[in-house]
Amino acid sequence: MTIAFKPDETYRDDFTFRNSPAAIRRFPFPFGEDVYRYAVNIEPHVRGGPTAAYDNLFDIDEHYIAECRERALVLAHDPKRCQALPHMMAAQWDTLELLMENLSTDYPEHFSLVRDGNAWHWTNRALGIEQHFVFGDAGTLPCEPLEYIGRQMQGDLTLQDQREDNLFMDAGMVTCQADWSLEFDLGMKFHEWHGPVPLAHEQGVFDRALKFLLNLQLGRPVRRLNWTMTINPRMDTSPEQYPQWGPDRTTITPENAGSRVHLRVELQSLFRLPRSNAILFGIRCYLISLEELATIPKWSRRLHRVLQTLPPELVEYKGLSRFRDTAIAWLAQRDDGAPTSVGTAPD
Amino acid sequence: MSTSTIKSRPVHGTLVPDPTGRHHIVVGEGPGSAPVLRMLADPGFPEHPRHVLVAPDPASGPAGLAALSACGVAEIVPDVPSLLRRLDALLGGCRMGTRLYAAGSESFLGAVVKIAAEHGLLDDERRTEHAGSAARRVHCTHCRHVNEHVTANLVACGGCGRTLLVRDHYSRRLAAFMGVQADAEQPGATPALQEVFP
Image (cartoon, rainbow over all chains, first blue to last red; front, side, top):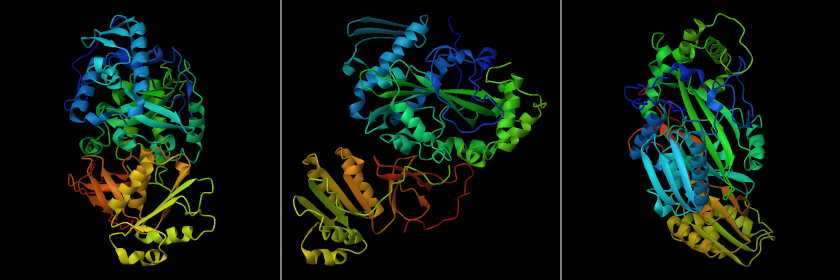
């Protein structure tokens, strides 16, 4: 099926990003109950799930072209949003292969890959890219493999090297992150890069998650959802750009909350890579305004209840303190107290 | 962004000999000479092969190393940058079984651990003990300038001039703590200035 892209949308300045009714219905809503608490909520990353966002291992949607352009803008301003330590070249090629294989298989109208031994021919019709290159020879691509394929993907990518019974974040393409810095975290171990997260360390969440991931098997990827809230449909909420987006948090009123407060959901996927034994971590970011969300009454009811019962540490950590009450008041008008159905799918 | 008990923050211990080592490198800075002396006096610490390098810290100068000099067990290096260059060269030629011991200020230990990591030394092949200043190196997330010798929770960035909040989040690769603009959301609304890393 050909995707109707919306190539002119923006994620900055005039913020023209919007979700079509179809994009709203496929949104990966993260709350299966009316209360949110931390959990190692990892499940097999198999095709199919509560919405169409789970139909493929790497989801491409109507925002693809606009999001790739936003990524290019971020990289032009700050090339260090894509970095790889020297020992990660094998993992970079693993990543390029996995992504090209999946995109060309799942979206043949938009991508194709023809292989003759190591001579590869990649076509990305959505972005108008055609590339002949030699797999394994970085000199035959315009940039390193992770950057090359990362510029053609929605969502961030990080590569974790596995050694010393730990995972090290030794490479990444990170331009649409929820307030963490690749430049700062590059080279860190699992518990180090998760250092700033409150409550979860004490609950043993990271010990269990690391143990699980060290045993991640080839061909058996897993996924989880994470979430926060962002003012305006802004993809780049990095610490680097905090002076630009931080002030937005003080601008929310009862009148503009519906259009400007966005639920930000990350569909996070983890893949064991075949040659390098590294782990690819995909962080696919979805944004939806409260107004858009409220077109699915179950979702606005539930978000209202989740925000009301969120532990104070998480309100602070997720940066919601300045506008949570206004968002709750906006949502309260759309919560009739009716019970919500089990699971995350729209009614 | 808030300052909290963050797990990336380095944790230092007490210098004691590691009997599994086959080649021992000991480095100290200023007040770190006391833990170095204490460990050298440990009967369990082998005399050979070992290297002991100590440099004065800027605050107390060479006088702070008098006790160590008198023992004649350590090589006194003129300053910390020279010591770090020597350490880099020593680790470049080191073999399996090397153990590294470091004592000194927070910044000194950060610099030593960064060099050790660059040479592939594992965590359990090095030991660190904090002695002296707790002042931090602070990496500005916005302009990437590194601010040296930060003793308060806030610092005016030497690169971009923003008032940075010093977080506990620490990068061993950069040997620096993270600094983010303290009043980005509301200009001028900074927390009270506190001397927290003397």
